Image (cartoon, rainbow, N blue to C red; front, side):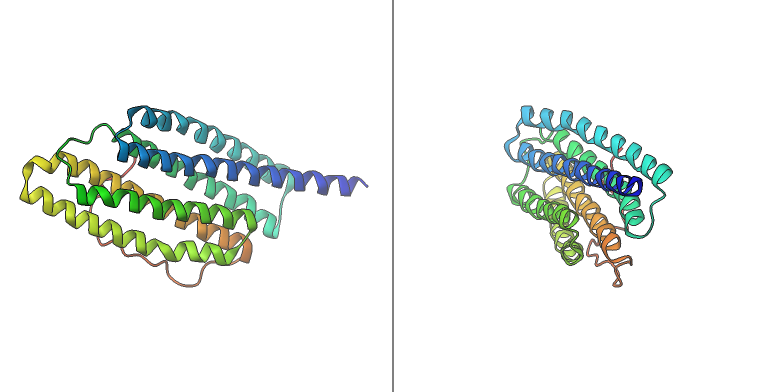
Length: 238
């Protein structure tokens, strides 16, 4: 009877951990969406709300870290339970970084000048739509423990990379042709790189989920199409 109670309590703690991760992911997803809308609308109030909301992600990150430490110390988990608990910490770290990138994007919403080319500006919502789909699907993969869906998320990352490459080249062209656009284009370059990096963290999460479910790493090398990766990262979070 006592053993059954211990097992039941452990299951409840694992469920609580999963719930916290999914709630944290929901906030991160919402922050990315609102940050991109703040850019499109030049909405200072929405940007400020997005920046403030990042604190909620940090709170969840701390709570998940504490819970993971407790479970590892007191429960001595094995097999899939151990993979899930350790994976939860990695996923929380990726979500925390996604929140940081969303905050960085929001901060630039009012910094964009009037001399911003419309064509690359229109690409930002397209990149945002793609990365939001990746975040949604990777959280669904975690919720349903669906390794195949995790693979599908990982395999969509090159599409985001290609879009970023296109924006990158286009912005460089505009800056060379008209120096008045340099400030606005530079901000767009930071924003586009931040979105591309969010996709990388969604991909990290997909690989972690696959490992949790299958107990092995994804066999194929991660597809990557970002030709600017060898350059300094203009979207790096400070």
